[in-house]
Amino acid sequence: MPKIQIQELFSIPLDDDRYLIYAPLCRTAFVCNKYTVNFIARLKKGVDENVSDSENEILTFLRQVKILDTASEKLPVTTHTGTPLPTSITLLLTTACNLHCSYCCVSAGDTKVKSMSLDTAKRGIDFIVSNAQKKNRIAKMLGQKLPVTALGLFYFGGGEPTAHWSVLTESFAYAQQKAKHLDLPLKVDLTTNGVLTNTQIDWFIDHFDSLQISFDGLPSIQDEHRRTAGGKGSSQAVMHTFRRFDAAHFPYLIKITLTETHYEHLSEAVTFLADSFTPRAIQVEPAMPIGRGEKTASSNPALFIKSYINAQIVARKKGIKLEYSPVNLNKLSNHYCGTTQDMFVLSPDGNVSACYNCHSEEDALAPKFFYGKPFQQGYTFDMPVLEEIRTWGHRYQDFCKGCIAKWHCAGDCHYNTFNLKGEGEFTGTERCHITRELTKQAFLILIVESDGPFWYEDH
Figure: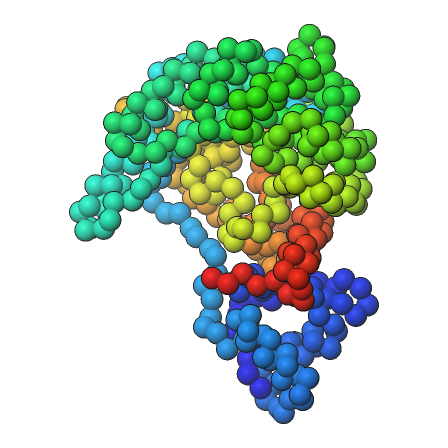
């Protein structure tokens, strides 16, 4: 009997006699019965025996979807080495914020305000530009085709990026000028709370391709949890921003953060947003018990899963995409995000962090995430710290090895996990259950959309 030539095959029970089978490296998923599952288990052991007609049909199908009799697939594992040469930068412009959200994971506004100088932003931009030039020179020396490397400029914060407006606009203009001079595309992104002036809205329409805007779905929920620093609700201001962007056909993604008390309102929120505005997608996350959200965050994964699945049905009927960040079926990787891939994040003081959530040198986790500081015209890196960060791309493999979401979630957010679980052996978080169940649901949807009984991505 032939042996299956794949590294991993996941079998997830659906009921007493139905299983979801997923082969991530073959990009194949299908639903089968217990008989088929047992037969596949025998195949994996390489048992040499005669097969029945029904088993021959299974063999034919497994060959059709490239599970059987194919070359061994390469695991989607990458590791960074050497001195980092980033060509993208995330600027944490300020810790100031015009809102005081009840669950803010970085407690923006609760500490002394720090703001980035324009010189600090320019130094960082010059560094990624220099790296792009260096990579192009190396490629040319090796006789390789010059890479079409986009410069990445991202704005996030331990506060609201637009609260430091002058450095935001001037740093963007500086990066744009540098990119134009090198004839390189400039990819820009920014996450904002959406409380913007008309002047700011007009500027974004003229200069950006899209934005990510935080809004908690329903005006009543927004006003309960995302109040201004003066205590007023912010829903009307953000909805004004939505209407202005819609009128200009400017694309934006809405990011919803929900505490447990509002999980059951998610379907209603999706209906309201889809009927009232035209976001390109809606992303939803349960609030984390970190920072100001320590006492108001989620604690009921089962309710979140149920609410998300119901809201997903609504979203599909409304023709809008609903997302949950660890469930990304288009990604096969051992990296959840850029943290384990030498992400280059500048704090307001100009030091280098691997994570935009770890924005402050005073953060208890700063020794784990901060790995560089300004030196001469560039930066010097603490390589032992960086090498340890790079290993996190493999940190959860033992715990995650039997999980269907292993190569999509890749261990989830490292900053959140260290806050919740500390530095001991990883044993999962509440989000693990959410991620597994929603990943399973996503594959079942793909199978249905493929008119069953299987989904196969031909590549």
